[in-house]
Length: 88
Image (cartoon, rainbow, N blue to C red; front, side, top):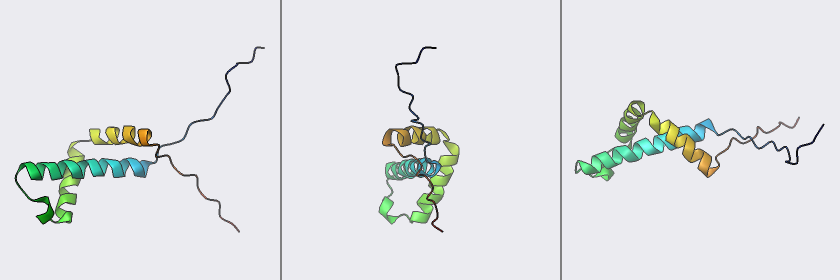
């Protein structure tokens, strides 16, 4: 039986789902702010809650932002942290 000359490494690390959601929401907020600016609205005068509502709507209409966020999380290395063991 021949042994492979390549080492067997366990390099799989799951990407944090919360990081993907945060990155997708950030992209949606940025897109909403750009839309407002293009309409001539001063973003600093819009309530953050209003921007968040619009960002949620934008995100529901553009699910591709989640795929882009996943790719970005992988590039940034945003992996899940292992669970801590409780000391008893």
